[in-house]
Every structure is written in C-alpha cells, then in structure tokens.
Image (cartoon, rainbow, N blue to C red; front, side, top):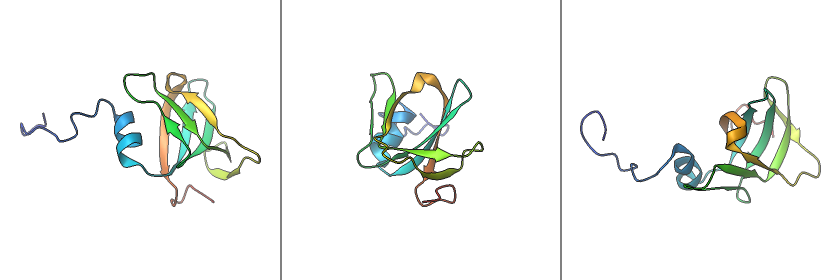
Length: 105
C-alpha cells in the first residue's frame, strides 16, 4: 500500500531487480561495484539475461567494457563474450542510459 492507502499496481513484482530487468526491457550500461572495491563495466542488451525471483540474483552482460578508475566507460573489451556476475558479490549496480553522457560509445 502507498502512503495514501492506495494499492500500487506494481506490488505484484517481487523485487526491484525483477521490476527493472523484466518490465523495463531497456538496453543500458551497467557499472558493478564489487564488495572487493573493484568495478566491472558492461553492456546489458538484447542478448543479456538476468535471473528472476525466487532464484538468486545473477546477471549475464553480453559485453564487458574497459572503464576508468572513476567508472567512466572507455571502450568495449576486444573479443568480449560478456560475463556472469552474482549479485551477492556486489555492493551496488549502477544502471546508465545507453545514450547517456557516461556511455562514450
């Protein structure tokens, strides 16, 4: 229920993870902040995949990208076939518009 007592139409979606990846369906750059302090940059597109509730959260990024120490996307890693990352290894995942200023494509 919302603060006004009106039930939200999206209450049936179990997690924000499912809401974004299942319902939004948009391509984006993904900046993953690992618990180790390292970052991984990648592209989530039509060939990418995420697990759904109740399975453990995992993401397959179809492309890995080179990033700067500040997390700016530089270029696609040559020969990349992507990566599979478990969410339990992450502190945060940033989702960046594929046409945004942080996506130097």
